[in-house]
Length: 268
Image (cartoon, rainbow, N blue to C red; front, side, top):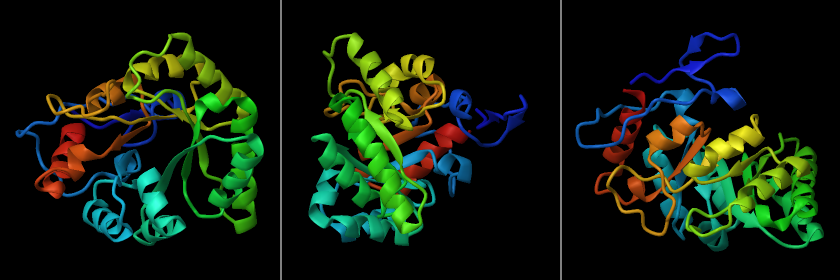
């Protein structure tokens, strides 16, 4: 299958973002041993693949980034790595030429989240997650804090992403997703993090949001604690902008081969 997207003039191009947010949904195959290996991901795809650095050591994290940056353009720094290494983790990844997705899911009173946002805004990260259940005042404080911190450092503000529901949550009432997307819209967030199965509803409510899907697993692979996992094909077909990929690649016996095959399943 070919990696193509619709351009704003209605034609076809080899890149871009899913239709509603300037990107088109991708046709993607499921990863298997027969998928071709590719030496590196096309730049327009690389920036849509987020490498989850679920480690507690910045040296190990930097090694993973160096090893896999031909296929991933963004690295996710989550609670484990940020707790272990703090802002040094962000700086180390930026030094490798990779963008940073800071997945802290900030949740506190608005004043505290706003102050934390100011700190993050000055670090150079491209994305920051906020807890969607924190409500409009808290989310807005985070958005404004990011903008203030980035402006003070002479940087573009990171995209604030509201986390709607965790992919481990399989029992949330149906109204929760809509409520959290509306809060993200009202507060000025640039997008959301949601399960692959929720992308269509998010797109209907917020066509121009950046939609990030975690819990990506290849067909037949263990889901671990992601009760609502999705394959790359399912997530991109639904209209996801970015996929967060971790153990599918980082736990593989040969990480480079796993990354190469994963990308091969998307671009072939």
